Amino acid sequence: MKSLFMLRIKLSALSVYHGLLETELISSLYDLISAMDVPPDVFAMKWGRFFSALSREESRADSLSDAIYNKVVYDDNVFTRAAAGGEMENIQDTGERSEDRTIAAVKKDLETLRELSMLKPEDVIGAYPRKAEFGENPLDLLPAWECGSTAISIEDIVRFHKANGCGEFARYIAFVRRNGRCVPIPNPDLVSLDSLKGYEEIRLPVVENTVSFLDGLPANNCLLYGDRGTGKSSTVKALLNEYCDRGLRLIELPKMYLNEYPDIVQEIAGLPLKFIIFIDDLSFRADDENYAALKGILEGGIASRPGNALIYATTNRRHFLSETMSARKGDEVHLADTIQESLSLSDRFGIQVSFLAPDRKNYYRIIHALAEERGFEIDHKELELAAEQWALNKKGRSPRTAVQFIRYAQARLSKGLDLR
View 1 (cartoon, rainbow, N blue to C red):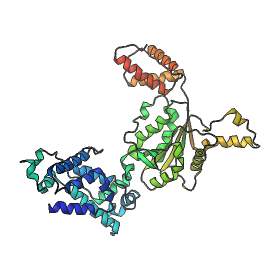
View 2: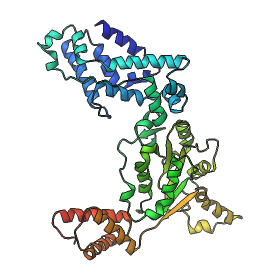
View 3: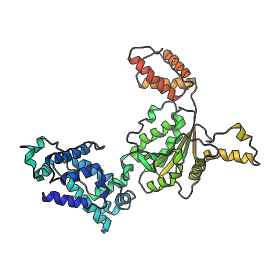
View 4: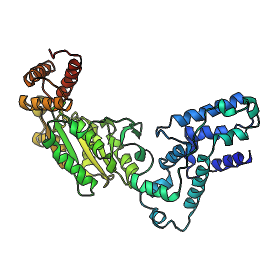
């Protein structure tokens, strides 16, 4: 009873890691060990709430210590930010550092959380004064958890953050800018470079640029433009899946939030990760204020691009602006300058790659590559005729059309049906 009381006091005193008290896992466990004077049904309800929170952990933690360790390493606070930025290397290298208030507080917090992670079901039920009302063995009625033995040391935490960053950027690989923050995408599109058939040589400059970026070499912003359904966006997503293990992250920035770019720069600056700021499906009207915002980003304003971020954009129009004949026949004195300005934005991307719709030969090549990958056993001519008919119905050949056809064909063939 006394030990649980002192543990509650220590948890209440969490300082640098105080934000963990807001998480469902820690708050429900705190409520449970505080429920020593409640009726048995209320105690059982708090027990169940904690166990439910533990079972829902995204980490699929095998034990309480695993779950708490994950909460610690994915926390975003002043210490984890400093560790991610390489400001705590003395701790990592020697285990010694002249103690300042923050480091001393971190050590106390980690010791408290280590103690919490070792809490056993028997410890909690043993301290409950009315446990006899549950019967001879209360744990027959209450679900039990494993404790585990995951260590929580400041040296290990520093090493983790230096390699992986901190907060949600350490836990997730893909994000979208929404409501003033980078919202994680727990289940991003799993498309791979190998699955994108027919455009291997075309996308090679983008792949090589990304590898140079990860290797710490000079790299350029990239513009992927061309016909719809040719795999522009899929290429960027596939690069993330290919290189996320090397610290690559992706932040999708919708056009309407381009003015929040400086906030993103501030948020990711100093993290030991590499970021692609992904702007998908760009196009602008002549009076669109977002056009000026993107131009400022690419030219480099006060919040210039940090060394750990590149901008990758896709568009169906290489020159972005929707033009009309009346616009070209405008009555401005310097009309040529105005038109030239409207075409200049793409030139601010160091690498520009054109994704054009495939001709019939290349379309068939993509079809056969996809069919072979899935182990189709069908006459090539029959497959091509069916694929061509599918493309006619879709009003055009494209890699997207090819993938859709292959899905249809696979379903038909698996049922023993022909493709007509």
